[in-house]
Amino acid sequence: MTYLFLALAIIAEVIATSALKASNEFTRLWPSVLVVVGYATAFYMLTLVLRTLPVGIAYAFWAGLGIVLVTLIGIVLYGEVPDVPALLGLAMIVGGVVVIQVFSKVSAH
Image 1 (cartoon, rainbow, N blue to C red):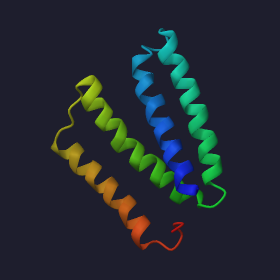
Image 2 (spheres, rainbow, N blue to C red):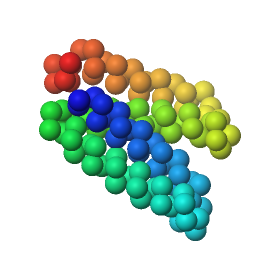
Image 3 (tube, rainbow, N blue to C red):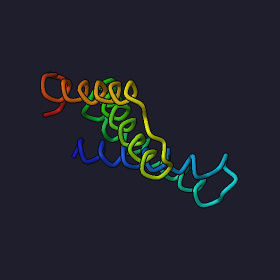
Image 4 (spheres, rainbow, N blue to C red):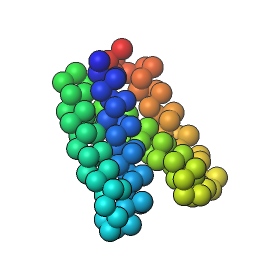
């Protein structure tokens, strides 16, 4: 269940962050509502994750995967194409998450 809660937390955070841009500085109602509901859901799910995963590991997954997914949404929805250094940085973030998952003893396998 831990990784299901973590996935839900990441998805909610990605939705909220993507809606943040669409909210146009909180001047558009429905995207603004989505931001608030998304972040509230994300943080609640993250509290459930912290029952079993150390906060540093949970946050590494949350931040790393969130960054990659928000970047992909930025490309698709907003036409924000990252340059080569940004793509290399994203690849390193993904690599770090993989190393934690595969090799770390503190990750819940």
